[in-house]
Length: 355
Image (cartoon, rainbow, N blue to C red; front, side, top):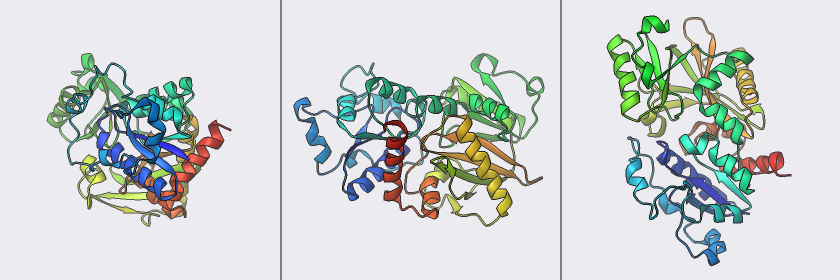
């Protein structure tokens, strides 16, 4: 098959996306496919009359990925590389190459890549792509909307409230929340911008930083629940084996997620009983269903150490596919090697949406 692996863009998760894309592209090429790694924003300068040559270029476009740093990327520097004014998000030849491909493998993470906008554009343009469609991406990317749907549908999730810039100084007493708390963005992944606050000073600093450092349009405040962390993935509507995450530090933050030794990941977990494992898996399948997700996804859970209750925090429409990512580990435990899993995602996407 001719496959474009679409990654990069202007997301804070750009490095993660490019690393996911490189891993996917390499695996598909090893499987005999004509796969090419393409940055959705920077695109590829190439003769439009010879674009079919791109799929068989020797390097497969893999040179655009150089690993994940411990700090988030400089998006202004990335944007400055565009030779045009950048008003159109798609870079040079992106639409043409995706249209020529048998399918576009979505390796995008965060912001525009995961909020449904690109999926909606592809639907209108007739471009075939992998994974969840525009509606499921939009619903899951907004953590407050997802939380509200969870509560209406019986998916166990912590209560939470949102703050915008004009309401950021609202006292905790008026919000009805008590320390410790978690402050996190409504529309980011990879634990970027997540703060665990034990004091009022930490909380106020976290809110201020959320609206200045990244910045965010809206943030969520929710209770901090101490317990064991688990990733639950779904493929084709059925839950894969759980992965238990034991961070080196207090939280599974951006650095811990993607740097060697940042966390211990156990699949299947051994710290909880089978009944609790299945309870998490059924809750994950329900979350997948009510958010209108398709093909594959991954949810983040915590089992409260005080009472054993489970809580779903969020659902990821395009979970990481890097060598350190959780869903390939879960797929491996279910008997699917990495390359086989990439092919299975393509096959399931084609069957679900294009046949």
